[in-house]
Image 1 (tube, rainbow, N blue to C red):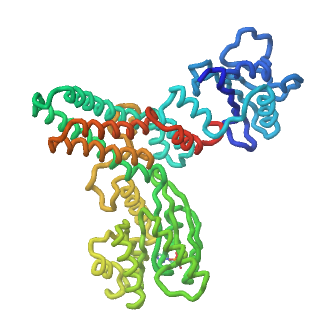
Image 2: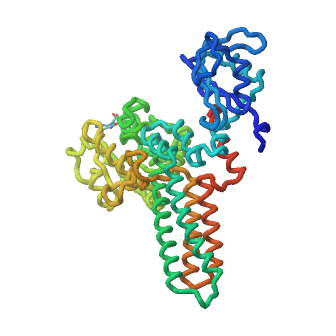
Image 3: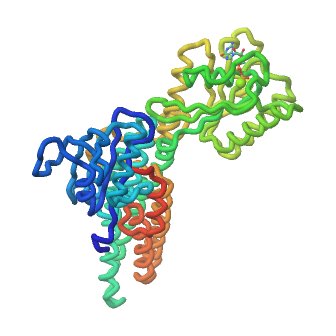
Length: 485
Ligand SMILES: Nc1nc2c(ncn2[C@@H]2O[C@H](COP(=O)(O)OP(=O)(O)O)[C@@H](O)[C@H]2O)c(=O)[nH]1
Ligand SMILES: [Mg+2]
């Protein structure tokens, strides 16, 4: 594309509303000329320094709009790789509108979502996974989300992926040299060396793919759903965990009729907590029935279920209906923690009414946690169980290595975590293809077959970094960005 074909885009990078300052950006070949029309520096500055104070003007009229600071970033040393001018103005609706209108009148076009970052990607200022991380960093609510996004913004995923790409290109080159030889000359040690390299690449790719379990939870948050019979203390549990009186608590069964959702952070991780209407009883009330249906839906989406069983246990028929519901969740492999609620009441209970005794007999092997809102240490224990679940992907600590993001940002590249389904999908498809290449080699098949699989795997991996990517995918990714980024 010819430089003169590229238009100059402009947008506010700060959100609408009143603020002390707002940032307006112009990027493209005409941004300098546009600024000459919009901006008049204080005094008679002849040279254009990189930072200037002055006024923005309505072009042609030279009526002042606002007192501003103008920063110039000359190509290619700018975010987009083009000439970029950044105006820091006062953040009010009228000023913002006047500056945007003036820039458009002077020849700029309003930028679409993600257009600045898209230009940065096209101009080689950042790779695709780093550009995706920019948006993750902007939308991060919890510390760990931000931490992982920042690592990816700095190219963590790309470096890890490119190492595998380089390794596989090496294998491919080796294969292609062997392809030029006669079959007779093929040496078994060449085949063995190739298989070894491929196995190593597959192991590394699997390792990366496995990080998605905690990576997805870090980026999207952990969906925790509290369920159980009416009046067992579910809403009290949500309030205790969130530290807010978010759900109404009362001794009247059926108080919570709809799902109640609250977002909280636990040790820097984002958790979406949902309280549900009591589940395990028949109801004729249509509103309560709708509440129960919504609870069932929430359970379908849960990453983790906290099922509360509290004393006194209900009569046998009701309890067995509840147990059948728990069985169904466990059969589907849904991670579930039995919360033995109202633990403070347990000492006075007869054995047959004790949820702990019941749970041990009916659900052996299912993790349990004693809980009372009266016992302060229980909250710390529950928070610990949840954090462990996020970090280790299981409720019982200490079995799997931690995949917690390495806080030593920039040092080494060993602990990259996949957080995007797009990246995970590409890695998994690449694994299948590389594995196939290895199997074909092991079976003594022609090198051509393995070369074809490897090339396809390389295409998959290159789509992560954007080194080989379709226009449609670029559109789709940057279209999800906000305007001004
Ligand atoms: N003794 C005791 N009472 C509790 C505890 N948690 C909740 N409750 C009481 O149990 C009743 C029902 O609580 P609620 O949270 O509304 O239960 P839900 O219907 O399951 O949401 C309320 O009167 C709460 O004060 C607890 O840990 N110990
Ligand atoms: Mg409730």
